[in-house]
Length: 156
Image 1 (cartoon, rainbow, N blue to C red):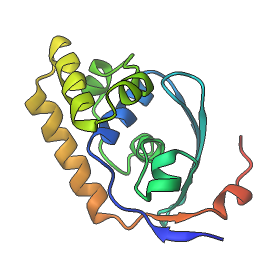
Image 2 (image 1 turned 120 degrees about the vertical axis):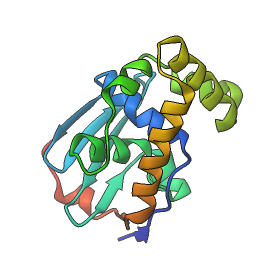
Image 3 (image 1 turned 90 degrees about the vertical axis):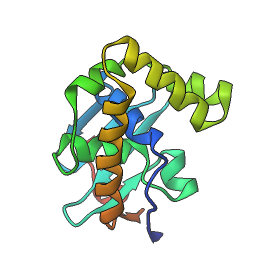
């Protein structure tokens, strides 16, 4: 059994979580969800309990030790952290995997995503203000990775 406190994510993961919800790539039942990647090639299994024990098989959570975007998306859907529908709509359809693999730097991808939001009528100031609020909330939470959760949950 692996149990460890997850670090706050890179800011861009907040935007990726919004995008996954806007694109309808997450289906949730209670504390559990399935999240499809932007390319549709991967599917992540996510569990978050009421006491903030969490499991997700995305790379950020499993291998880098931070709260991955599938966990953030589930927390948004459950109302634990803020969700902004207008920003989410502005971020729909972004090919996250392609951008991340092409540019290999979150700062570059973030700039592309912010330009896309601006083209769709949401200023970068509004987007980054929202991201700051979510990051502050995530930083105040103690989310603990617990791989035993995946064995306990069977809704999907």
